[in-house]
Amino acid sequence: MEFVTQAVTEGYRVLSVADDEFVRAHLAGFEAIQEAVRRGAVRIDSIAQRYTAGDVIDPERQVEIYATATESALAAGYAGLRAVADVTRLVGSPEQLDAFARYESLVDRYMAGQPFSALCAYNRTELGDDVIAQVACLHPKASAGATPFHLHAPRDAEAGALELSGELDLVSREMFPLALDRVDSRATESELVIDATGLRFLDHNSMLALSELAERRAATVVLRTSGLMPARLAEMLNLRNVRVESPL
Image (cartoon, rainbow, N blue to C red; front, top):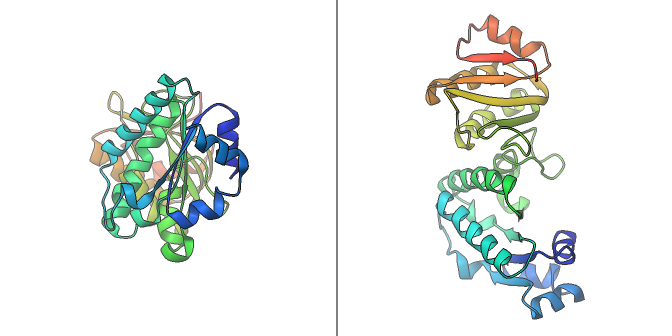
């Protein structure tokens, strides 16, 4: 558990939320973590203590819980908060998955400006690749092969913007519109800016999805990319609510 041991070494408080078997298998064998538990730097909660089967989380409330915990860690003299959780039971149904994906986008934006980070674990065998991809695509990083694209809050850009990277093709035809609906986009002055300089490929279905997003948000999507194809597609499809710009 490098994520946990590194956090402890760097002076962060760590919160682990998982089932007892996960904790025994992945945490108990590390003496440094055991010592951190004894002095309160690492807190281990059973996931059953926090959530019951079938729970649908409130995305905004969940972010508030971690924000409060981060403030508490800072007040106690820690550098911030790190959380690691096995969230398999929180994405088992379509309703749970939708709520959790929206939460993941919100908390990612919170993490961009606060001393908080989290590592979510999923049982791939139990959930399947599609479920994991729907959540992984809303983060800047994920396990190799988990998602063909990433759509998330920026780390160093204007408030309200998004970053888009990877590839958008037939594989992501259904998942990309879902991600656009769930992501915390925050249009500013009737414009929703998307930094797509990390995007390697984009097809016409993805451009249409961006146009539909602009219509729903009553805003113009500004797609910043150095690629030539997006501008050509916008012109060919007559997408008046999607403007393609070269990066600043």
